[in-house]
Length: 206
Image 1 (cartoon, rainbow, N blue to C red):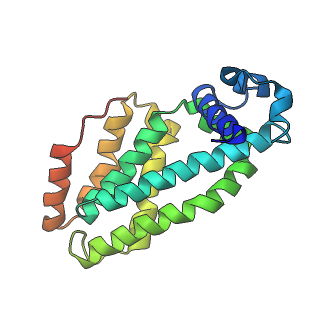
Image 2 (cartoon, rainbow, N blue to C red):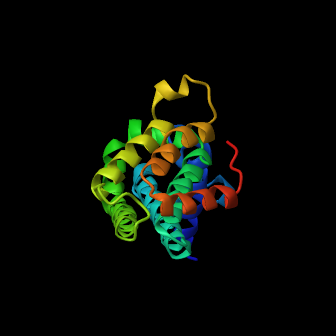
């Protein structure tokens, strides 16, 4: 690993743990024992470094989703695995990170998502289409609408203040929104897979 790659890797971990706004170049590289002068050899400023960190972060997420796709035993299993991986990512990271990213660096966030979101969207939609064709989901439904609805429900868990006011844990919100919707669009065949997933998944606590 080159020095530049090591700076990006360590800085990403610092951003994820402490958020973005309060982190200076000096704080970011503190674990490495490097001078800020060394950092400026590779990056113009903190935002430039953040951009490279985000590319690494979303590249790793994309790789994880690819592995999940290979591991899925059926489309229902694949959809649930995908959203639970998102769930673990969202609730396993300091929420200050995503708040800072969206509030202070929205253009940078849009740029990164433009590069990576299409990859995940294509994968999930292909799983939904497969599920519809193979009879796991009710055939009358449209894959695009299913996907958009699932994303709206997922976003309501992670970003919607109204649901947060209910004082329920994230996992309870997940079970009562997105999971309930996925169960509702399953056929009898799909429900067997849905119930198998419920029995086999590890308990998630957040």
